[in-house]
Image (cartoon, rainbow, N blue to C red; front, side, top):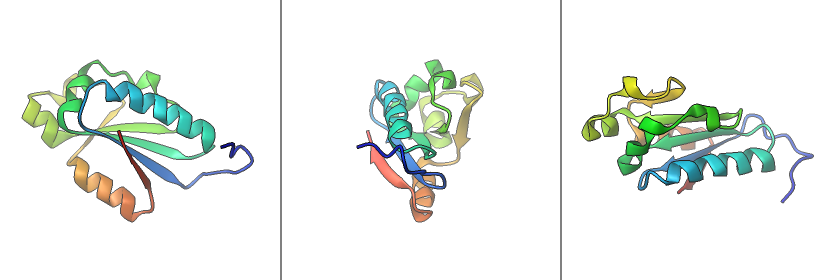
Length: 113
């Protein structure tokens, strides 16, 4: 699909990563594809569960321009990961499920990896 003639500003997509650390790389590739297919779209990668273990080595420099990434603080605590050790560009979220629900209430599309 080529949507290059359309502008998708004001629309958002949540990419949810929770199971495997390898899915962080997959989420980055997905965000790149989404931004290419839907110019102007805002992509939010929300990470919780076991995938949080990969956040300690994650660099937000790899993300495309309109993509943000957030990590669930409850999950980080359960895994014993200090949020201060994460890349400064990673937003610390109070709880991933509430962030996802709020985004969907506000019209975001949802993709689970």
